[in-house]
Length: 619
Image (cartoon, rainbow, N blue to C red):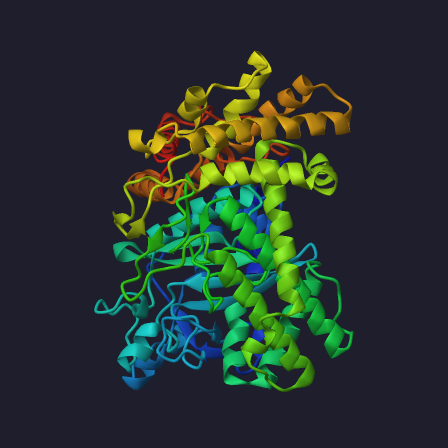
């Protein structure tokens, strides 16, 4: 069957119908009208000289921008529509101050907003000057019951950037004397977001996603990102710090409405203030407890901090400039941001809990219309809920990583929590063991090496028990679990080490036997199931932050020869190769990555797989 798009090639009238959804993306956004003090609006002009170097066909179809039967090909009509909709640059304060004139036919009819939110980088710690520094929101589109937000990074410098407020002057967009304050983005940033976010999305980690990259001269780009709700805790916190009740209420009502419309929350819009805002608080407490546990257990460094700037309200990951996924539990790594060091993975829990405490304060403020000190909420019931949910999530995550099926994991936690706790303690002892070398500098911060690879032991152990039927000897156990960071002094079989090896294995098999008993099966049957599932969950070569950096560098070198649809195919294959969900993954992609692709793409994919394997234990 010939698709409607194939029929319409060269037919301008039909093309307009096929791509009519793009016309809805014109700067209009409900946040502009519902939260009048939550944004700064900018006129925008058409930016010339752009070319589409990546377009996410699948995401565009999911959002309703393209019909489902549209081929994954960037035809001239589609590229023209993309550029018409998204190739813009704001007319900022520097332009106005310097009386820069632009042709009227290049100026868009609608304004685009930069939203206000709290940011640590600003001298003013109350959110009066901070927010989107190089991003504007393009608008929304609704499809199949979900409203999506779209934002463009690299559309020019706004008054909300740190540079403007630190140096007390406006900057021309593209000014080379400043970096972040110049309002520009780069193609490499988009590619890093693309490859990292697609891997996370495939593994059910909530994240904004890259819809497209429009490239200009010198590697500059506009990177368009999409998500069902781009609200961050920091969108609330600025107005909380300022004691601005009216705007804070508008932000809360807007967020509750969006979550209800998207089906993410129960619809409590017509409830009274107490019930409505208490429901929001309970959702925040649960979300950030589960998110903190997931980030910790997946070794994802997100740089959570008290301003709530680097994460979305539903725990989704945003802004991949500071995102890392470690191969081992490098829990003492800190990013060096020149003026300060970042939090560590283990400190992210307390930052998440602090965010919940701030929402307890917000909820009380919204209900009683009087702002009480944050310290009044240090023992709030929502923090107890946070701790309970966090602990439950930690146990569930651990049992999932062992390969046990979720429904039986739940039964184990209900009936044999003590046995699970014993295994968790042994697991944690190995996971958090650090090299005797101590802390040292790396390219972008400081770290102290973890020395054991928990994925390796969880992957290899069940099949060894299945074939041998007995515990591993201590030296065999260490040989499997040791990482490339471990030196001889780190691996000495001390009395404590021998005790932990024994405890780990005995408690592991105890859980297997409990699962067997619950399912009325034999031990070997459970071990076989765990072996199959664990081989996917604990894949030998899993992406790390370093590997994504090197993968993007490789793709960047090859990209001039790649069409947008070829880059889309590479992204899809790479994300599939890194899918670690045993319940959805239908095949294991290994060294044969790229089968069925042209030789050029096949070689790129194999090179990418080699990079991931080489960097598997790093930062």
